[in-house]
Length: 116
Length: 113
Image (cartoon, rainbow over all chains, first blue to last red; front, side, top):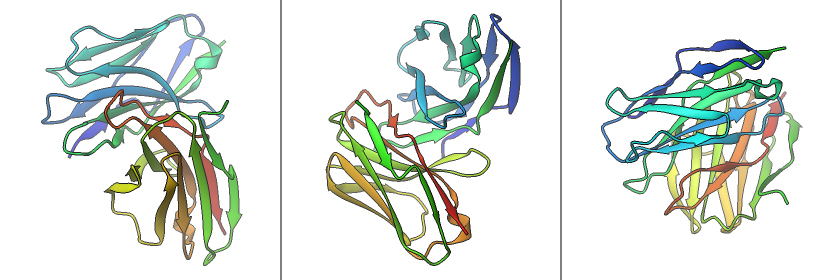
């Protein structure tokens, strides 16, 4: 079974600084998708960024970028120029689209606090 | 316009009652899901529906039953509620043939007393 591990339960960063959240996963598949979701105190789950495993280029979305290391099964999220609104739980998620299964497998999350 | 909506957002009820949570998506997606987030914030898939067919059913008690009247709606019905059912329930949707990102509703916080 696929597993997703986020080894940092909590992190903090000063406003305007850069922070990296770690995620590792375990899978025997070669084609899959990885996501980072953000859950602010409002509870809403917000998609931050996605990465297709077949793409070597790391995904970027404005201040958010990933470091995808397929061989190491590592998928870290870098947040640049941190803002107060980035304070949230961040979940790493894995999806394998084969065999009729489309479920997201989530890590346990990292609680990020941005300090003014 | 809200992409994925759920009602109600809060639900407080007593043990043994039966309740339903409604979900609707206006994204034109063909697959919908229910996730449960426990008190430790862990998210786990419960069900998914594609074209009105159940394609995933994790180890969920049969007191929980998803019902999909059409591909834009996936409701969750819970019978004989137990204290352990207290959690936040999220509905989500996606396209089965890609892109695979799932879009979530605002969640329903269920409290069983």
